[in-house]
Image (cartoon, rainbow, N blue to C red; front, side, top):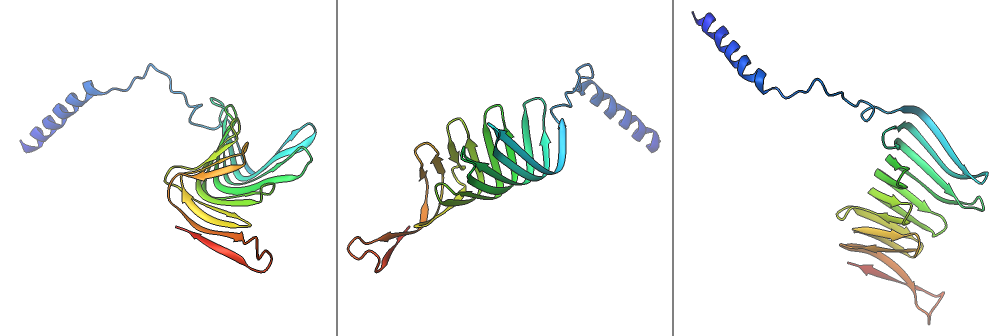
Amino acid sequence: MLKLSSIFAAILFSSLLLPSCSLKYDEPVNTESLSPELQFTNVDYKRYKNKKLDTQIKADILERYRNDGSAYAKNAEFFAWNDKSELTTEGSCALLGIDSQNDIYTLFNSIFLHNIEQNFQLKATNLKWNGKTEQLSSGKTDTVYLIRDDIEIEGTGFSASGISRSFTFEESVSGVIITEDKETEGEEEQDEEIQ
């Protein structure tokens, strides 16, 4: 009798679940948005403008998606050159997201960025570059380390403009700025600590 009542309970429980099932089998699933259109390993991608090397990306894996034109690179190294074929920027990150339609590049984890033209280096865990506005920014609470000849600072809420060649930190900042005293120039340098 116990066995029969447990079978009856299982059937009753199953019959209550079946009408509440919400899967819609008549609607097709778009698997194109979930799977990459193209996937490459050990990539060395080069882009040319006016017959001159403009951009280079090396990565362990590069995936391109059809639906929105996005691409993702794992363990990426990237390089950029100016119109005079001079290397202007080099860097690396664990994951690079590329939105080519909107000219937005998102960098994640172990980010190293070296701008040769402006002579600075950045280290961060999360950065976003907007190519249309030439704006580089971090998350509000993400720490960015900036190193230049006369500056070694870290802070949160980083933002930099490629147009005005300026940068700001919205939140806490600490580090060292080295300045030269005009009267004793060449004799000694002064160190200033920022807290």
